[in-house]
Image 1 (cartoon, rainbow, N blue to C red):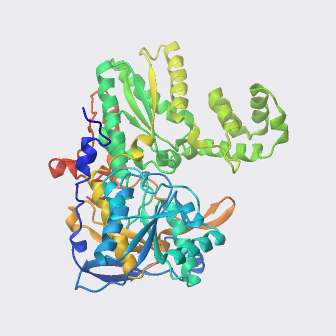
Image 2: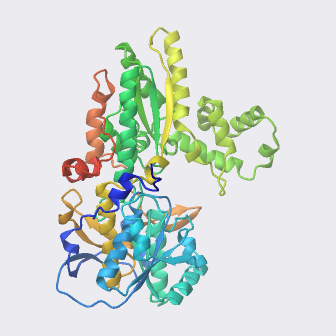
Length: 550
């Protein structure tokens, strides 16, 4: 058999032509809407962004033909990967070439550091065509360098002048687009002649608002995870002997866990925002899980699935307080560092914590308690994302069940398997929805550049209708910002969108979770992403988006 470097699906997907909104299919005219203001702290944000604050919303509509001057554009992939990033670049490239065949697109390599360190390539048709409808960020690579120093902005301006670059497109999440906004303001204030446009990326789903209905990559990642969860549920329902505890990516918000629950209907799904709202303790979370396990065991069902958001620990108020105390206690603590054994360290910590935090610390399994005192990030904080919450819950649940068994209140068998689904979903071949959405985002970015705008994020709305009906335009990034404390200083940042407990997706979940937990099987098996076939199978957006727009 002849050796192949591409799978049959890769070859077929290369020919897929993303669906475009009608507004982008010919010549366009720009329509300005109402002036905007930031979501909070208006006076502070306006003061920090005098050149890019209060700009109007923009929509593009079909219009008369016009000529467009030549522009050169640089593009940056920033932060973690998300399916569809390559199609943003493809849409941007095609949009620029349609506006003027002389336009050029440069890719800065390895993320924002490529702009600062002058590492780049020109993205030609031959290069771009290789990456159409593919997952990953490997066309130019990504990185997590933050653009926040004047020296970085100046170095970026030097390479832009050298290459004749008029605009930079930053494809990233809330932090990356915050940096894009700061960069846009700096270049406007210092009259550098460089526009900056953002595109909303993150599988976590926490970059959204009334103008950004969803971030790209969320749809694909959740479909990948939901397929895996469905497969596990079918296996659990077949073998009938394992409880599967599944931790899902999403540190700051529980959007992924909620969407996967809506798609697969597990027995239990924890939503961090609800835990925080109800001021729940770790023991209360464990008790809730145990109740479901005991109830199912009474009906002979010693199996099930539990979905856990990655950032759960930080949303448990008592744990948050404990972690904060530990961060303060262990920062540059010579006495603690001089102790040799784990037991000595444990006793020392217990003696130094407040009464409430000491009790929480005592209740933790020793392995987790030890991890909380050992693993620090460069800022001296606990690396919460490294805590294997699913293993912590398994250990605490098993202990509680053993107590109930000794009291004669539980007669079942508890065998648990732990999973973490994260990287499996970040670079999947994008779903039709994400392939279409990201292509439109990139194409819209080319129009914002051509219109001479800066400090805007590319916006594509009306996403639950067919792609032809999508509304395209731009939203000022300052509109999404507020002031937050970061590393002890108040800074302007894009406000993270957490799961809204009064929102339709959570309300639907809340109304159905009891029936999903009981002895009657409610599992859904979503299956793999479908790229070909009827539109109602292939082009569906997320359940979250559909419930929000009903």
